[in-house]
Image (cartoon, rainbow, N blue to C red; front, side):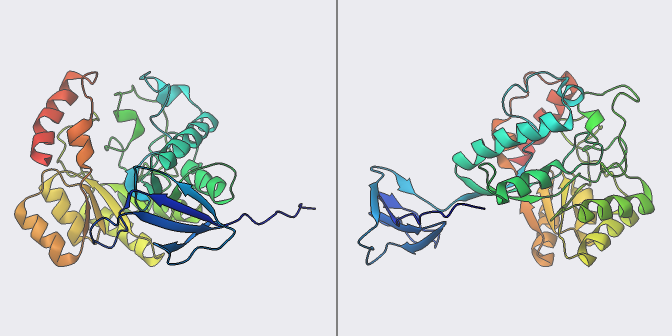
Length: 313
């Protein structure tokens, strides 16, 4: 039998200033009233007598940030080895995600899209598991909108074997893990992610910079395959986000009904106009061009970065 919990008193947070997210200027000073798990008042006119007041000092309070493209099961501590893709099993990758989720929340991000697993898991949707653990209060982390496995053709940018140019059969992958070719397989791959908890679908629509996939802008799925992916997702009420650098690939993705373009590095003004016309979202991932350290990457990948990143900016 669960023990009864004593209600916590309200908390009144004070700061030198506050950004309230309405587009107005900074509010000075800032004030928030927190009751239980919710902010119940911004710049409250009155505060309950039993509230605990915490003066944060010379800081700026602001709403929780959102990151539209993260991968919590990659990166983070102890990730320097290029062999991580074949050294860590799904259990360890999930534990890595627990650590990264906590760090992400404490950096101020309260909502993220985990935009496509591209790791070998045997078909397990690790980001869905992380979402459930956080939602149940087992550990700290942001709200996660999981994509499950990214949908990628064999040898596509989000095929896990292409980042280190692994030899054949070193990392065998399945349709359930998103490696899908042809209309029938992409439909099955999307249905599998949705069945097991994905809330958005991620697809590799063009080449990438940090993978051995050839030109970053080259198309990777046919029109028919993209249309099938969009059809499956939209019928289930989910949106589709496409990794996409190249102008032609972006235009085809938009025309196929893709809801959101990730990167968009080589997009022309005419294609941008089409995005505006269709209401397609763009996640520009500008930090990749500004802050990614490519000094340890293979020479051919450094060359791609030198070409693409300035144009992305």
